[in-house]
Length: 43
Image (tube, rainbow, N blue to C red):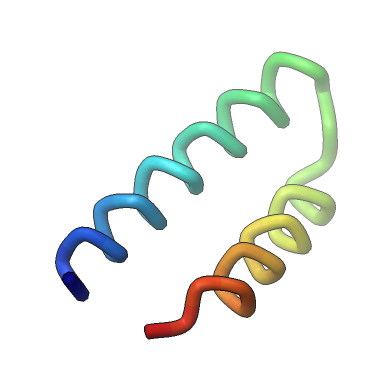
């Protein structure tokens, strides 16, 4: 179950990076989104 969480987190980070790049968002906002995801999905 923890491995699946890691895979999901990895996919989410990749998606956010692509999304941020596509829409020219700063990595600052991307990092905030990642932190929110991590807080909501702690094992």
